[in-house]
Each structure stands twice: as C-alpha cells, then as structure tokens.
Length: 248
Image 1 (cartoon, rainbow, N blue to C red):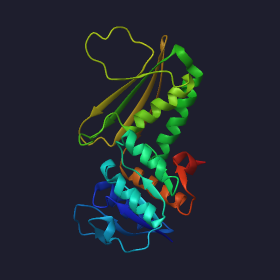
Image 2 (tube, helix red, strand yellow):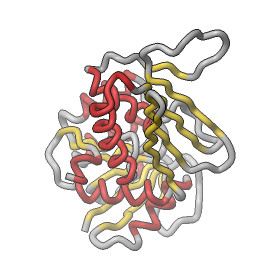
Image 3 (cartoon, rainbow, N blue to C red):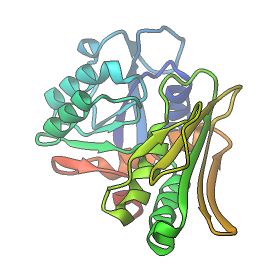
Image 4 (cartoon, one colour):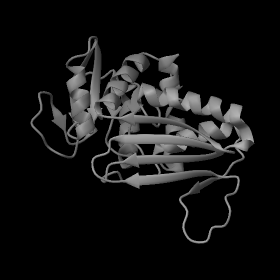
C-alpha cells in the first residue's frame, strides 16, 4: 500500500486526487497540507511540519510558490514527489534539478496521457512537414488560470522545435503592424469561463493545413494521472521522471 500525502488537498485538484485515492487499488491518502481549511476524511495540516503519518509519495497540486516547502519535506522524509503545479521560474527548475539528486522527482507540464500522446505526434509531424509549414499553438483555459501561456503549450512548442534543432524562436501573441510572419512558433493564450484545457497545434502549409488537438473535459483526468505517476515513482531511485517514463 502506497501512502500518499496531498499538498493543496483542499483545492479542486487536491480533492479529486483524494477521491481517486479512495477508489484506486494499492494507494491511500494518509493526509494533506493546505493553508485553507475543509472538513475532509483525512488529517489536514497547515504546514508540512505537522505531518506525523508515514508518507511514501507527495503529490503537490498547490502552487509554484510552495515548491521550497514541498521539496524540503520530501528530502527530509526521503520520499518521491509528484510536482503537478505550474508556473515554475528558472530558479524553481534549478531547485527541482538539485532535489532530484537526492530524491525521485516526477514532473511534467501535463499529467494527461492524451496530451503526452499529442506531444509525440507533434514531434513527428514537425519532423515530417519541415520548414514548409508554419507552426501555431493555441491554448485555452478557464478564467482563473494565472500563468500564460500554459506549461503544456510550451512543452508542445519545445517538442515541435526539436525537429529544427531548437532554433525557432517563440512569439507570444501578435499586435499592431508586426509585418509578415517570420520563422517563429506562434503561441496564443485564451482565458475564459470554465474551460478545463484545450490545446491545438496548427501546421499551415501551401494550400493545406494539418491540425492536432486535445481537449480535457474534466480536471479528473489530471488527478488520475497524478495518482498513476505516484504509483510509478514510489520506491524509485533519485532522479527526474515524467509521464513518458510511465507510458513507456
């Protein structure tokens, strides 16, 4: 039985993870950490220093600002961590790399299996279509999402750029007299309503367009992916892991 601690357990995603832990074989939620308060069937602590239960894996759905606390707890307990927050800074990513020398760190821009398949297809399409097709990425999320563009959009752009040796610059939106399109990968963010997450990668060539897309209809798919990742990373040696390791 894998004991899971949920960071950000009182949020929508944390509650989804808690619910899935109650249904999934081989895992159980032993508690959570959150600055918010809620009546839940497991202990909820305001900080990691209050956690007394044995923990095999931490799933973090809190925020990038909470990263130092999450990593400090995981390293102190010697347990793996699944990082599911977004909006990490370059300094945060450096801290994650450093932590992965001591513990197993699972991080991906998107925990959906479908998105990771899309990433693979985008990489193959860019390599096949080459420079004769322009690449534009449009991502759509709910009105409360704070960071833009999404980490998934950046991940998809990086995958497409692999076909060009990483040489294509990214252009985030356009406004005014910008002139003719250059060699960039265009990335555009839409925010509104309760959109869970939609990503479209458009390859526009001479007289034809190829479009690859993914639409998440519920945030539950990300919670399920996080639990799947926790089951995978439990007991793994120090290092960095992502959803491609799980799928593989």
